[in-house]
Amino acid sequence: MNMAAAFLHLPRNSLGRDYVVGDIHGAFSLLERALAHIGFDTVCDRLLSVGDLIDRGPECPRVLDWLQRSWFFPVRGNHEQMALDSDPASAPSRTLQRMNGGAWLLQAGPAERKDYLTAFAAMPLAMEVDGEGDGRLGVVHADCPGGDWRRLRALLEGAATVPPALIQAMLWSRNRLCLGDAAPVEGVARLCVGHSILEQPQRLGNVVFLDTGAYVSGRFSLYDAAADRIVVYEEGSQAGG
Picture 1 (tube, helix red, strand yellow):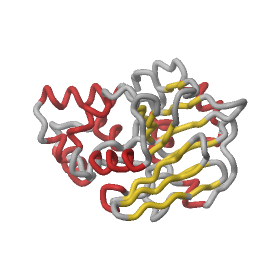
Picture 2 (cartoon, rainbow, N blue to C red):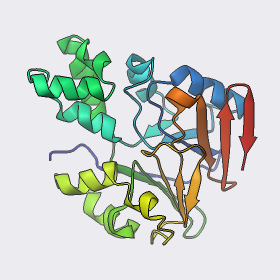
Picture 3 (cartoon, rainbow, N blue to C red):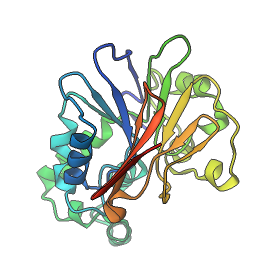
Picture 4 (cartoon, helix red, strand yellow):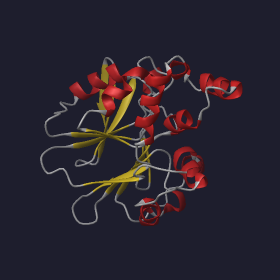
């Protein structure tokens, strides 16, 4: 599959804080309130995202505005990938897109749809942030196939094409969570993922699961990288852990 840059490397943020947020699914106003609650500073802080910015929630068309924000760094989720793989001329494809919350994109005009897909294609499949020593932070939507971050990075960096099977594993796999696999992902201090909706965020080894279904639960989970803690924001009730 032809790709834009499949892997994004960010230097350490020496001026502010880095947060990683779980799946957004069009709940951008709720996210803005969560960021206000934690005192997020757009001048020096950065917000990383595990992907799935779109579908299911109420404000999906705002995604282009968010993708232009200089402090916002998302990886691609399976819903962005489904949009890229969809065919509006195919009835089965349109049905599948509606079933997965993508009716909003089907309603877009051709030029607008092209703008969305161009933006989704530019989203990396994985990213990492430098930390002190070997304390780098990794972000991918669902999992690091094979449990070796360095190998995944080598496969993605500079790749003109990425095998569909690798994309499938990175964006769809739930094996680690379903098996309760706490084996650490090698080559990274922490790995943040989303994709699987949980009542509360969860840690398995050095993997942090952040999808708490904000678009239905009203609850966003954000990982504070410097403090190695998770902040849960819910309308009317907040907690940290």
